[in-house]
Amino acid sequence: MDMKRNETKAGFVAVVGRPNAGKSTLLNFLAGEKLAMVSKKAQATRKRMNIIVMHEEAQIIFVDTPGIHEKEKLLNRFMLEEAMKAIGDAELILYLAPVQDSLKEYEKFLRIIQERDIPHIVVLSKTDRVSNEKVLEKITDYRKYQERFEALIPCSTKEKGCAGHLLDTIVKYLPVHPWYYDPELMTTENIRDIYRELIREAIFEKLSDEIPYESDVVVDRVEEGEDIDRVFATIVTEKESQKRMIVGKGAQSIRRLGSHARKTMERFSGKKIYLDLHVVVRKGWSKNRKSLEELGYIF
Image (cartoon, rainbow, N blue to C red; front, side, top):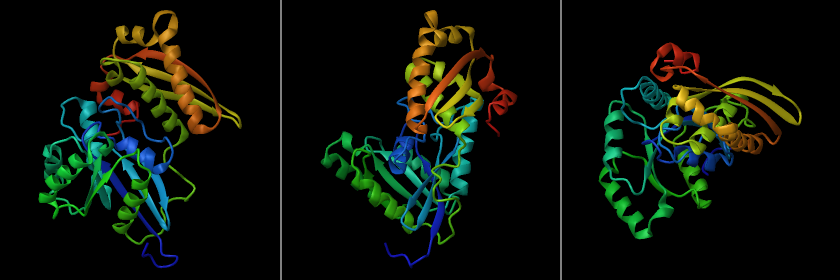
């Protein structure tokens, strides 16, 4: 890398794209750790999350964002605002474009940022799912916008080589700046917020229909120990019928959900986890500003 000796770079990189474009998967891949919530269901990420990746003499602070979408529900409006704030605060934008997508989503993104003088890189994601010929066709399609982006990089999280190339390219567009954070840190999130997201991910993975979208998690307290963390959390949902489904007959469903979350939390923390889960009903929480703010969604 062409960087002067002892000259450091640092900057914030907003990772944006449509819901379920693979943003969180890419960030976990680049960080080498499971930090961002991943689900096959769309709109799983609700808040911004900073993930720190050190690359040679550069500190890249990736900001994982909710997918860019337009819906009237109050929680969805909060999610869109989170994505827009991340774009406004960034030195660089990483736009994720799944290779199977048409260019309509990218064109929508260009309209959103047309008033903002922020450079962006297009990452053509999920390239392992199509032939090389299809990837080349899509690259050709994007070339008509080549004056708008700084670089176009095909990347599959199944191919380790793409991480280094992508990070090298990102660093080119970051300013010379002292590091913002201790280089040992991997995220600015506290352990309570990370555990919350891992429990939410288990809800998305283990429960169907509308339940994941009308549920949230409050981590009431974490008792950290040298070998074991004790985590006490409450699942908040909209309806009594949803609570019954989450708990399940003989509490089987919540035990499965808790077991899945606990194993993920143990892999992340390197400790044993004791997880105590309860379920409460708060009718209309996702449509009420006060309820949302109590759950940490600050408008």
